[in-house]
Image (cartoon, rainbow over all chains, first blue to last red; front, top):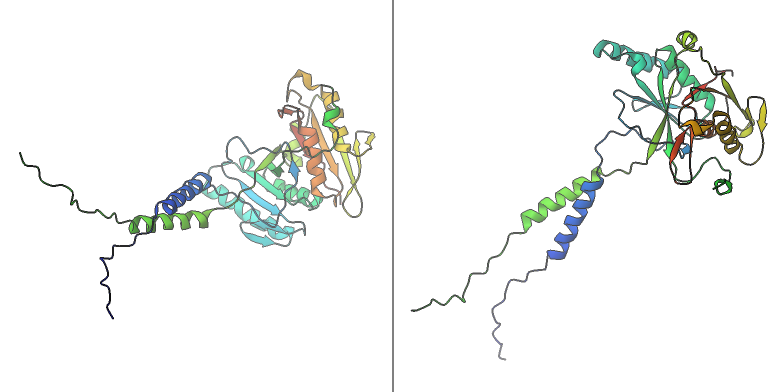
Length: 160
Length: 160
């Protein structure tokens, strides 16, 4: 049996161009959408929607974010707190740190309240109340931006 | 003149492996740091504690009161603006209309120094309080432009 001699084998190269194109497009996409800001969001809280909720024009200098879940728990500084007393003592600690380490007035510190849409309004008021007792005056009630009107009514019936 | 034959040029193979390595590492980094941030916005209210606010509470305009009554389940039972009970399917829309009529926003957005106090039942779901704040603080016209109505909103002292 006669074996035919094989010809010289070239290096088989896959065409990498489409893959590299795709990879670069993905990188470009992620680079544009990446957000390094420390946004304090929590999946346990579903914010109430409002068409007027707009992001602040300038970031708050030293905000404190308090989350309030629908089962009356608080999330502050990554910890879940089950009582208002625990939140109060944590806030008290925070005010002492602010007073000691910064020359900022407590009244100028913004307390951001991220309340769940099903949380009790009274609980939000209690958070505001204990913050007031500790000297906080500026509050930001956070809502989810909505493109559709949340108040109901018939906007189309308004005179044009 | 004799030209050298240039046909047997050396085949240059580009080393793609390091580049692809880096590209994939970048992709992995971006994929893992990617987080979806929902658009959120704030309602800024300034609420000093009762002791400090008594001095600044003297306002020329009378305080407007919005009462939000809740069912035992925390749903909205009734909205009352002053002495007027707002009935219908969209009480917050009617509230907004009344505030617009009262303040007369033709004078310019945010021109009023009126203060509104929200007196909500303790167990009322927070989304209704947010609706009330939306109705009081402004509205979005048909062109999608935001107009301010009342800047000064506060909660009534807590009564459980």
